[in-house]
Length: 340
Image 1 (cartoon, rainbow, N blue to C red):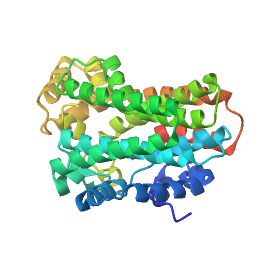
Image 2: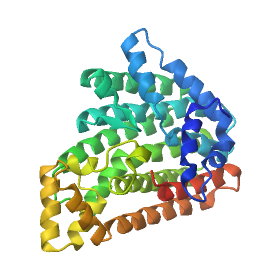
Image 3: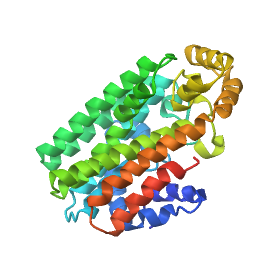
Image 4: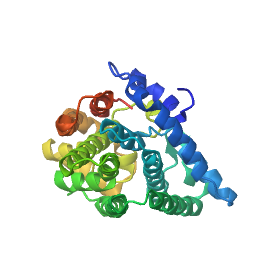
């Protein structure tokens, strides 16, 4: 069990009450070890800087939830081959590439408690290594030799890119609605969760109905996960999250807590939040945080995340009973119960 580096990183999640992450991932430990080995192999490049940057970001403490979804879905539906390892690694490479690009766009200097790749190696190296990971992911998916797999991943990467641009357009826009916020989440974050779960079903030869159920599960799980990420930007312990509190506000991102606060605050509070979104920075953080607390914006956002998790659970009703299905159900609970 100790061979899977990502699993060791998940151990710290055990501080979430009544949620044993090691038990959740236990059914796929062998698969995850195989994925970890494959990731190391596929990261190889004759260009030293590519190896340095890619290995740094891949092994810097990620949760590996997206590749785990591929493995859980495939196993839950009786898949017996090895292509789920390849596709799990592909999904992780795509995710890692988006992180590299995100941190450059957001000018972030901290992620998971470590310096971001762009802070260490520079923006140019981060962007170009992100491109390398994207192209390596497509090399790997071709080896599976399944046009449906290609279609799903090609669509996902395109929609993720659209989500990145949408988020950029929404920055410093205090008039973004809940629907506009959710559109960004479903494109930028939930789409890869959706694709990961769908890929497992495709490999297993599932019916169109089951395939869609798995995709729905991934989409709702990813949405819940991102909403909680946005909640934690105003409520977590920095030592636990590994990033600065108020980063979203500093970047002028109108996330769900801010949108709710603007809808339910006093005129003075609304003006304060609007000013903070439109101007960015951290000068207004404490005042905005007080507004978030008085309008119960974090409770509202957590309730929204729970509703998404409930929809994820409902999507699994068609799946046969198994330890893999049980693990997926627990992941839905973890997505909203986590505090970091």
